[in-house]
Length: 300
Image (tube, rainbow, N blue to C red; front, side, top):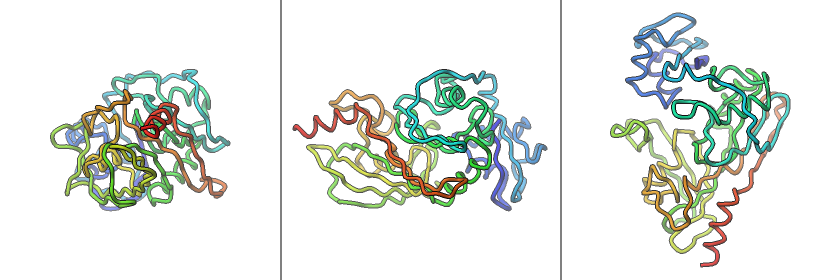
């Protein structure tokens, strides 16, 4: 069961669900509503129901409800931890939370073993403590909340664009501009529901990039995002003609380095601690495989 407290007023129920959970298609949302799988303050409502501020909205994800969530002793690279939050350097290849096709071996399974019962419940049964996500093949920093207060305050910071996220990416092609901003809306692809795409009908998405170094046929970038749309960096870079090396979804995935998955690393997070208010500036080093590719490019 996923749940959240509305900070909107007057939006249709189906609209706010689509905004909150980009992994749910319109068809899926409508089916959940028809099957009473979406509750507002404990009661089923129609798709046209107008949401009020502070409404508790619960979404039963029927497709994954039979997954048994269990702690697993999977090694984690802990960058920071206190009684309220834990920040992990997630390796490439690790899924954040259980879903169809990935019932275990996820970050959530590992976090449950590490933190025991000390995790926020706002994200729902299958997403304890999860405040934001990283794609399976994106490595780097991710924040996990240990209690509901920390979770809500962190979510508010993310909503208000107060969490500064810095990524490092290697893209195909040599970018001429030293820095630029991509401000193009993103929506779920109408051709493939597993993919995202640029669309005038989509939600606003803003990506800033700065060239770190140019190589023969490739460019190393520092990227900051104002918004956190699904696959945002990957979609934006592919759209402007510079797909991320190894991205099998938004490019042909081919590269001479033999890497699997996109070369995208969430290197730095800067945010206000949800309880103390202190500014945290945390950094995760580049993965070894990423360093090897850079060294190879340096030698060409």
